[in-house]
Image 1 (spheres, rainbow, N blue to C red):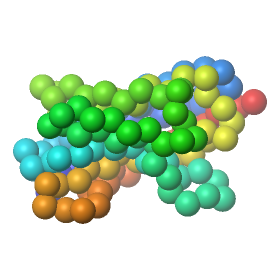
Image 2: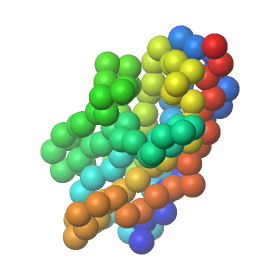
Image 3: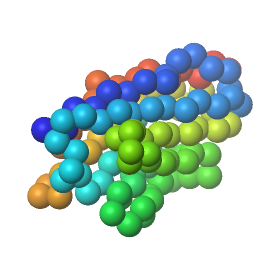
Image 4: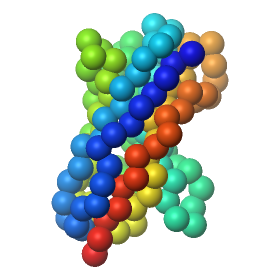
Length: 119
């Protein structure tokens, strides 16, 4: 099983930027997609961004499109999420997720890293 650990969250002022990091360990060779999701207050967990290692295909959630960038460093088994022009409504718990090639959904999840944006 793949183990995921997020870091990089914190308190930032509106308009600022953050880079979140997700380090993967364990069984990573059969991962065919990785992504970032977030849980914001009063809302269900929502997609932020996904990336497919095999072809680099990227998908961004509508609420963050144009302000985020997802990337991977395969040599380090690490995934990143850059968030720019942060808004108070971006406040929430950001999760790293992975989907094995035999699964139809993201089944491996990290514990999350908290992002708090002050106005």
